[in-house]
Length: 181
Image (cartoon, rainbow, N blue to C red; front, side, top):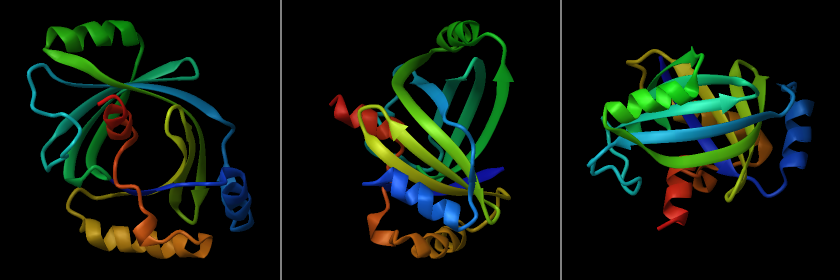
């Protein structure tokens, strides 16, 4: 499946959450997520210029469970072919990745609330070092036109006062990486 999302930095997450609830969005309890993304050793991937075909691997620890995720970038950081699966032992998976010459690159910690709003997934995130964000995403077929889906998402969030020119196009891992450099 292909995940297409748009993201916004949010000044007042509580007010946004209240507005979404008024629109019928139902949220989960807060989820603690700890992500470590990996890139290939000696790779030229430096999180400054995402390009089509880039591969990112991630181990996510979340409330006592762990999953392994792979993303292959399509038209940008917010448009990826994505696959994930539960893993029983994230420390062992870390060793496997290192043995395959994938190295830990960026660590992202956040508290997330997930919601459903008219068939879209909403994430309200408090990201350590970065602040508060909202993501809206849609899972589509691999051959879907990303610009059509992005327009659909932008049209959906207009009611919340979020505009196309306010979009944050960098992923959390990219933003954290760029803070360190």
